[in-house]
Amino acid sequence: MKAGRPSPNLRCLSRGINMSGQHLESITIRPAARADATVLGSYGAALMSLHNNWDPARFIPAGPTTPDKYASWLASQVVREDVVVLVAEDRNSIIGYVYGALEGADYMALRGPAGVLHDIFVDPQRRREGVGRRLLKQAITRLAEKGAPRIVLSTAYKNKGAQALFDRMGFRATMVEMTKDFR
Image (cartoon, rainbow, N blue to C red):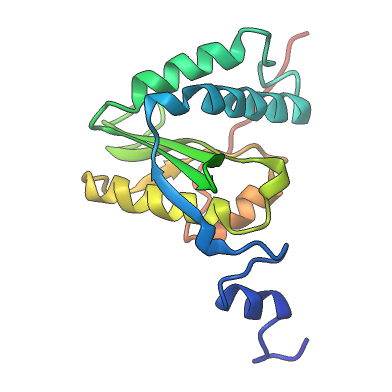
């Protein structure tokens, strides 16, 4: 494609239609509620499984109780003032979420106070529609409003799609985790 000409996908996005033809106007980003916990728990377990599939030696697998435990954890977080849990909803169905928190200095990570994004997940059937970008943008805004001087996150080495999104949203690489297994 020649320089200066928007791609067909960008033209669609500028009209409020994503690449799959879904209307972005029907998707809302809102604070999560305790009533959302069951769906969020299943998405948290799916996030764990995705990471475990990339590197089973590094990432713990999801088990049969993981969705309930994840649901319980996120339900406890939605009421905290220093936490942001947002959901993407389309026609009364949750299609993704983001979870982040304000954290103080972390000397082991050599980092000062920051907003830390712990999770971002979009239903696999709804990826590449701009949902993750919208969740991330809102999480950044909300954490900044809560006083975060910066936002940090980690991403799996093999998660190139997420890394590209984070790069487009202005994040830069600052650390690389290295793992050595003994088994």
